[in-house]
Length: 330
Length: 45
Image (cartoon, rainbow over all chains, first blue to last red):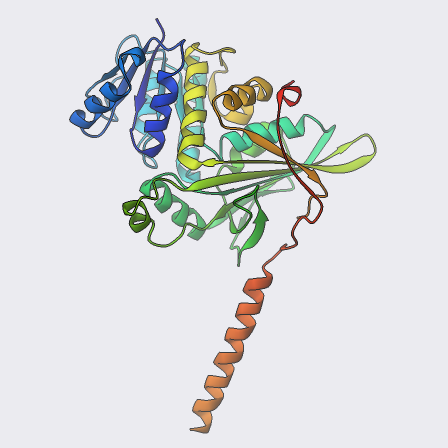
């Protein structure tokens, strides 16, 4: 009986819960939210077929017995305690934290995870996450890859908006010619996402650059992030229940004697995309979905998953990627 | 008064230049040819 523990029931967590409940291989879904009463109501709302159960669990608590995988959709850095507990108890886990420092602190657990033979997937959201898988898929069409650039616009809940604003203000570490370089980026860069998002101003950020550099062994990798609109709390109060998000992945490389570029894009509500990616990853870690992911250590999705079946599974769940056909312009 | 006008003129010019720079952006050339095609089954192999 495959059992998954989902910790954090915000915008992303709720979507992940629905996706896990709709996965036939998941026989038991344990939900852990901030307030037990709300969590219980949510478990009921998923319906009896979901076999969801609310539990009292807080970051730092031991993972309940019988759990095959853990998925965390918690505010930045809060999931470190949950992932550490999962490693200690040899339970695979997936995190959708997209903060660069939080990702670094999770990657610092790599040695423990390898020693314990536990697989930990980090950055399981839209970007980092789905974008890394698209980058790997694009890279497979080249003999050598010269550069990867990932851009994202969109945010899930209030915690995500705060994280995006922080990332756009922070000092940037970019991967340049196989080495880290600190930059103080000035100004924005216009990025063309699939319609109807279209052109958005984006700023260079650290984001999940380290995960990209690890998975593709590419000499140059950069991440860009769009600016959240002002007064998002007011927009939500008046019925805007979630922001549309988009990611664009540009991969430059060489095939035969030519230098070429492959551009992939995806457009979806950010919370829906991130929740679906988190749920599919957790289900694959638990063995509830094929192929099961087993790669001890702490890795990004680009290093862990086989792009084709992963993208096919996401497409089946409504998160569809697109390829730009034409003459891409930087 | 003259100095005040000069300051106003300089600030105005700076604003106009800033707006032009913002509108022009960086790398802001739209992809004029081509379009987005959804990935389908053959792409997942």
